[in-house]
Structure formats: structure tokens, C-alpha cells
Length: 270
Image 1: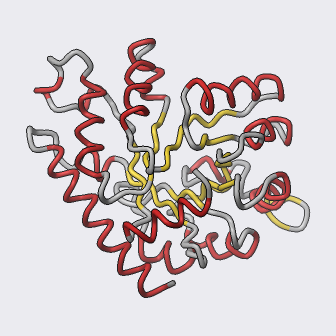
Image 2: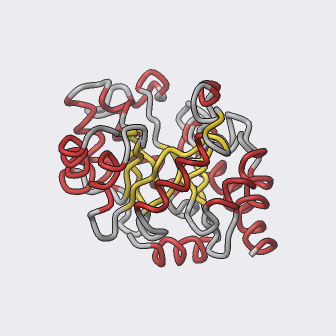
């Protein structure tokens, strides 16, 4: 899915919502546990309920890998079920030397045909570049995360600025605005303006809105660019809006509320 298609989807749905399918089997509604594949049945219901309001789904692979082969089967079925006009993200945070990165790229672009995969840049260019060799696919590189541990390295002084700034500028030079995005945590509002100075045209995947406390309006006002340039991820606040038999309709209402707010922000900011 290319940049123009993402932009068109945002404008058509008046939404830049990404729904995170961080599906934890221990949190599923009890009535699903008797089904053959509870995780897929949950995801299927969530997708059906929210697809009108979202332009992207992010599958956090850790929740599936933890279940072994059954989890990978659930992941593949979920990916196949997502409508083809919705942008898919493998939130796998892969990052290794070139020949290993080659295999990770094949995994998430060929074997499991996601549109994008999250990548850790710590090992340098040869750990990222294999993900940039697939037309229409995206590397979403960890730029500035919202966890407390980001202070350990990302925010440390480096040359004339901070380490995360060097990462953003350097990685941006490896790819283009058509195949590279960056993860920027929504709780890092104080840094978002600086991020936009460094990478004004790239799309940003912004987690942390909702349960983690990030403010959607503030993120949009600081970080939106002429193409919108944002995919704001919400996971728990949507998929676990409730855990009873009405979980899907409650998820739909939560997603719709985000979409309606996003529609206003698109109208007023762009």
C-alpha cells in the first residue's frame, strides 16, 4: 500500500486511526474461549466492528508468538481477514544484521504479506535496509518511544543534540518518505515539535493515545502535516472497551468516537 493510497484512505474515512490487535487470550470474553480459535474469533469480530472507522490495523506479534504455532495460525488468519484496502502493520520490532534482517523482511512481506513492519535501528543501516527493498512496503522505525526506559538511550546527549535526533535524521537518509515511517510515542508531546522539524514529511505511527494517556488533539496540532502524516494507534481502549457478549459493538462505539474526533481535527488543521 503506497503513500497516496494511505492518504486517500485517511481522507475518505476522515480518520487516521490505527487499531492495535494486541490480543491477549487471558482478556478475551469468556464465551469465545469454547471456540476453536478464540483469538481469531475475537479479532474477526473487532475487525468487522471497527473497519469503517480505521485506516490501519497493527498486529503486535508478541501476543501471537507467545502461543506457539497456534498463535502464528491465528495471526495468519487475522491478516488474511483484514480488508485489502486497510494498511497492515506487523509490530514485530525486528532489528539484526543484514542476512538475518533479509529473512525477517521475507517473513513479514512475503510469508505473511503485511504492508509494513516495525524495525529497531540500533544495529545500523544493514539492519534496516533489507526492509526498504520491497516496493509498496514500509519500514516503521523506532524513533522516540513512550516507555520510561527511552531515557536510558534515546534522550541522551549525542554530538550536538540527542541520540533520537541523530537516529531520525540518519534513518531518514536511508529511505524515503514513501517507504519509511517512524514510531513516536504520543506521551512525548514536548518532543513532537522537534521531531517534525527534523522529519516534516514522513508519516508517524503514534502509540500511546487512550489508555496510556496521550492526547489526540495535542498530537494532531503538533504533528499533522499536509498529508495528515499520522497513524494514531489505539489498542486497549478500543479492543477491550468491554469484555462481555457486546464487546464488538462497544469496540465499534469506541472506534467511532475516535474517528469523529479525527474528522474534526482533519477539517480544522489541514
